[in-house]
Image (cartoon, rainbow, N blue to C red; front, side, top):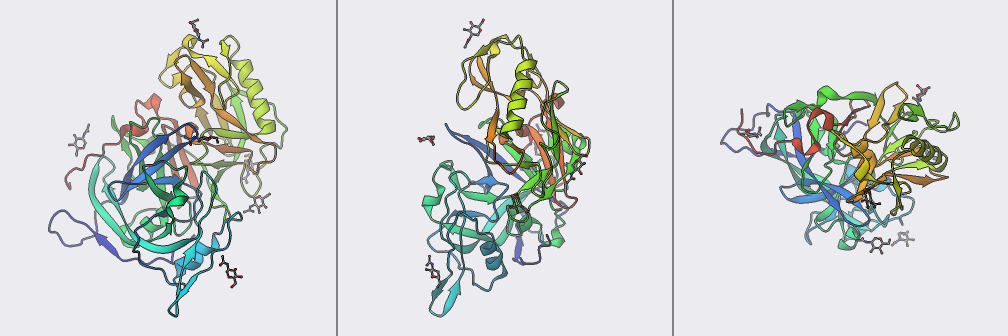
Length: 414
Ligand SMILES: *[C@@H]1O[C@H](CO)[C@@H](O)[C@H](O)[C@H]1NC(C)=O
Ligand SMILES: *[C@@H]1O[C@H](CO)[C@@H](O)[C@H](O)[C@H]1NC(C)=O
Ligand SMILES: *[C@@H]1O[C@H](CO)[C@@H](O)[C@H](O)[C@H]1NC(C)=O
Ligand SMILES: *[C@@H]1O[C@H](CO)[C@@H](O)[C@H](O)[C@H]1NC(C)=O
Ligand SMILES: *[C@@H]1O[C@H](CO)[C@@H](O)[C@H](O)[C@H]1NC(C)=O
Ligand SMILES: *[C@@H]1O[C@H](CO)[C@@H](O)[C@H](O)[C@H]1NC(C)=O
């Protein structure tokens, strides 16, 4: 979608006394934190040095718990119409506010965990992020006057306590990718890489732009990617891929030929909120059956909520990519495979108990598959909106690196 709507002014922070020459870098970088509690596993992007925004790849715009005083957005601002056009069907319409003969924009952000909405005032804030040469951080840059929704604190319920709001990473013209790439002079390509950490102690990485994307020991993640077409849905704003089958140790799970049929919404959606990949009931049943068959010989133990197949992992060997369990492949329409090894298929819930980390999405879900975050951890995912394709690495562990491998040191300008 062309992003002609936003013309915020731009400032470049330079550490030296140099004038505002265009920077020689074309890639931005920010850390990703993992937040876990009993019910959720969420990830946030850190902007403005220390502000955490929960990553939502489906959200149409950013929102946060803002300052009491904030600049209003006029109803005629083009962003106002865009933000208001993304009204979730579950939310009430928010009217704009008329005051002293002026019209001020309101919108309706949604909490991605609870699904609740809140009437909110539209405003602008500054977003600070870092340039990178692909190997370490160089210098901060401010994107000033960025559209954001000023939500009431109550909307943060069920989000991690460290988070102040939600960072949108959809392909909406108000989402972070558009805010960071609208300025043709900066030559930041319309693509972002999401590399979710597997632990709250590691800092994952989001890159915006063309790269390179180095993770220690120096591995350019771009060199280990396979690609598959990436599609968008103008209504829900999600990201979809054409998944056509699932195999376990090379054996296709037994589902009707049309189980994965690609409708306009796509057969598989990528979610940054759903913790474990969910499969439509008929697919899940076949998947569970095939996996159970493939792990014959491994001791099963009592199931632990919310999982339905758990093992005594003390008897399972370890490899570089986690427990030695049957390999799962997501078969994609263009012939590529997204391979899932033990580190992304089994969730360790206790010292010697691990469970198959997939869930039953229900009989009536729109998508055959919703790829959840546990399956994305330590996988490098490049959402390339310029070329409408998804680059994916499968697990980074066999390459000797993880999503915690970026060097966040701020280095000199070289
Ligand atoms: C988890 O969910 C349950 C039931 O939905 C709720 O009672 C509990 O407070 C939640 N726990 C946390 C830490 O959010
Ligand atoms: C919004 O405006 C409409 C038409 O003026 C009115 O009927 C409705 O009650 C208003 N809604 C709210 C939430 O104020
Ligand atoms: C997605 O699927 C639903 C139900 O089949 C349909 O109503 C909706 O229009 C689809 N989305 C798009 C963008 O077509
Ligand atoms: C797992 O197996 C080990 C070794 O056989 C045993 O000591 C342990 O109690 C088992 N754990 C569970 C949860 O069954
Ligand atoms: C998905 O992939 C299958 C198998 O290659 C192909 O037949 C189908 O046309 C693809 N669907 C879309 C929408 O690209
Ligand atoms: C991280 O980057 C800094 C700044 O360039 C550099 O001095 C340091 O050696 C790097 N660390 C590693 C482990 O490469």
